[in-house]
Image (cartoon, rainbow, N blue to C red; front, side, top):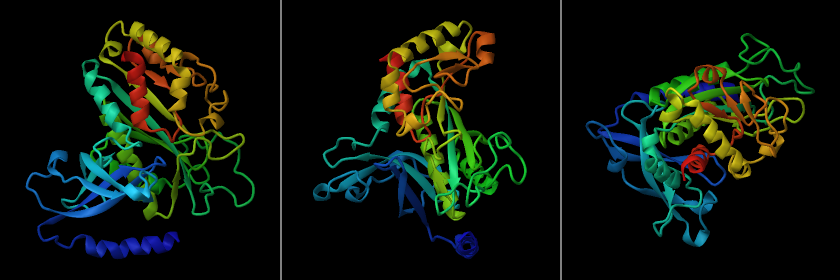
Length: 356
């Protein structure tokens, strides 16, 4: 299957340099009811200087086919919110990130961006910076992690984290292609590494200010799915992809404000942690599906029903980096979110808890 796909990509490249006769392709991307991305293309006239979200037409799709609307009122509207260059089609073609809206002018039930954006704007004076660490697992078309034996399991965890060499890491080609695609589009990807479980990887996005965090992470997820498609691989963001003595997958969320980043910021960090403690279960409720399988108090996690924090403690709900503690200012890391959590919901509830 992978060989056939590689062959197809070679054939496709023959057509990529064909002139587009004054037109561009715009790929409209949205988030569906299952927490995945979907997209479809339309032709637009070439525009000198490029398109902004306000320049782009509102479009629609059949929400009854994505679990976002009933069949008797199925039109869901796509309102552009961010534009990026297309790393797959190149030239002047674009990727268009959108919000989903109902026909009556209200945000779709699964549009978590709208309220998050309003809250970010209200509290913009604090200059909230986010950095999210997206863990994921690469699977073959039979839903088996790449590099795992057909029968049995690989050697125990230990050599795989940030590993180099055959037998330690797999599918680095997908990871490298995704990294370059993110850089091309302008996604604020800040790094990547192999993770603790074999076939598990992580990329980091940020720091991003306000609503930009959710926009850039969602686009990075879309790019990863598209790149993996070219390689005949699946991307799993299941928080516990393999049962047993294997690490789960999280979306560790780093956060700071102007006050926290300045001299004396530790008192603001400690005050924030106190507020987070008071709404622990409300955060857990929006921090991803199946998170109870991951937050067990083992494998570098805190227990799901208990709020804890500590300096350099990866087994706590909230980790204060040692450098932050030493300087007395900086940021903190919320280690509770699962890998399948919606970044708009994470960033929203953090801001809501601290400032609403």
